[in-house]
Length: 216
Image (cartoon, rainbow, N blue to C red; front, side):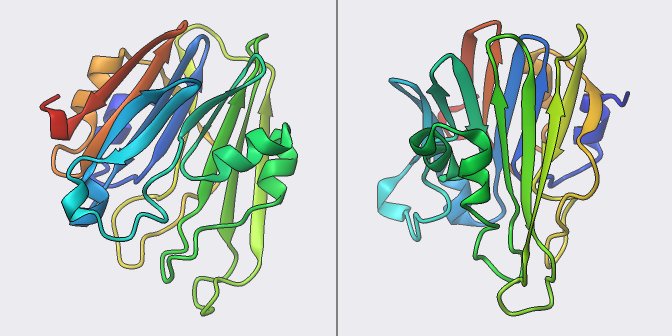
């Protein structure tokens, strides 16, 4: 098990990340461009959405404005894109992920990462990524699924879009990383100060939102 805070402090740009543990779910977004950084999390009836902090500066909204968190029955769906809506509309985590592929933002071809947390504490993580970053369209989509019956107290599983900074950005590789589950304020403080944008935390149903653009 690795220290999540150390992982984040030593990685200036993991991109978007999901961490799931016993009674806890964390999701954050980061950005390098002004368009990506011009965002905040806001609450919705069944979860949260991203919005432009300054609508007059919003450029292409297609990959940055979406619902990261929605409920689906008694389950919680968390993703890094509009595949959240696909999963909820199909009422199936697996079917929703199978219907989508990585983001069309070559040469990065950003992976789509998703999770579903069930009422009994079991959860599933998924990553959809490009097989060939050298191809103009990213090549085939590789869809990986990781199923967990639950997590022990203080333990979680972490997955992100990128391994770190770079050009093009290197996609996350391997299985989700088993990590410690620190407190929400600690996670927010550990994320790179220049690149972090927003953080969603859900601790036993208590939801908090951290937004850099709102002074958090």
